[in-house]
Length: 226
Image 1: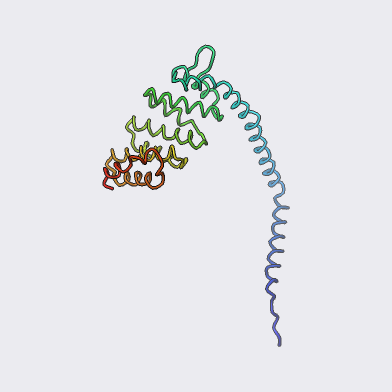
Image 2: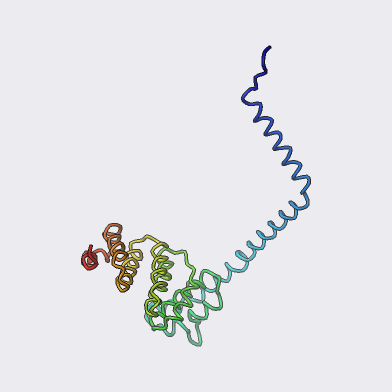
């Protein structure tokens, strides 16, 4: 008696048909629920579009137009005016507070944090730098690195190390990455963590050999036993 031999494609064909049938039944049984979910997703997307394109983007453009004078004052080192403005022009602080959650507001927060850092008001510097959510490779890294500088001055070395790590991870560019690797290395040294400091200094030497920090890094490597 001959036995029936199943063809290789038979089971898969049955399985596909079975899955399709179950899916179709699930859709039929839950049609109202699925329609509600789809409606919610449409509303959420429309709301996101409205907030982003119709509210945040115009406000960001408005803030950028207000900020040019403060940027000029910052460039000429008139930091108090850049921060608070005068009777005719707004300063960074007002723009950061009034236009938060916009790209221009984030940039104004960065400038405000830098000014407070230069004025040795480290807690206020942190307050603003924390709000500077910037994607730019240079400025975004410097905002995080500035937080590290503030934490060093406040004696919170663990948070300083963490902030420097964030700055290093944000961008591997030739300007900020070796700068914050070195600053983090110095904090490690101050804590007696010479192995970690050595790792940072060797990374500067190996990964960023043309950076300013690399020019004298051999002396730092020797100092921590490299």
